[in-house]
Length: 195
Image (cartoon, rainbow, N blue to C red; front, side, top):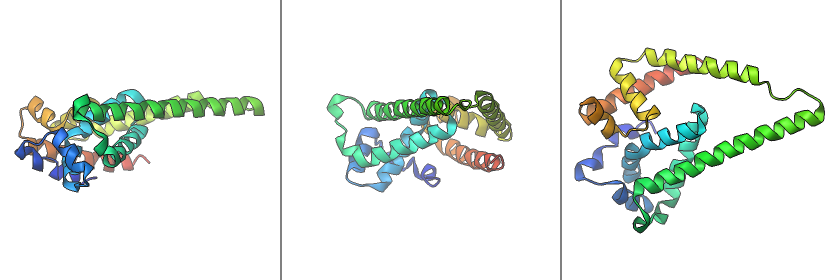
């Protein structure tokens, strides 16, 4: 979905909101989906990240939400609420399902380990690895320019849309999209070195 950010604002000049875009997505309009993605990706990721906490799993859940959105856009009923509320409800349900699934898997592993007489999951190792991952992300974020870091942080950790990021930073929307795309590419490259 790398190319999506570059076209996300195309329909905004026509004033199309999420409701209109969802109707177009329901009939298979790929351009509308790209525009909708640009509009909702920040808030969806922010919500999922707060529920799931793990960045990699959060990204997976967001992808699942986007796929579900593509498949089920026709089920949106504007009489029951706004498009963004409907989308965030889908995202929240997916995120909660993921947390429950991970928790259940951990409990199964623990039961199996107890039955086999083996030590349960090594929490110390997991905590150390998680701490190292967080430090690596911080280190990679420090390599971005101030504007890139602010844009990425506002969109992906605080859940703001591109337009909201632009307003908060008092910058043109196109500038924010470009800086965010460049910043995400630099982050991807930096974090790829951690693997």
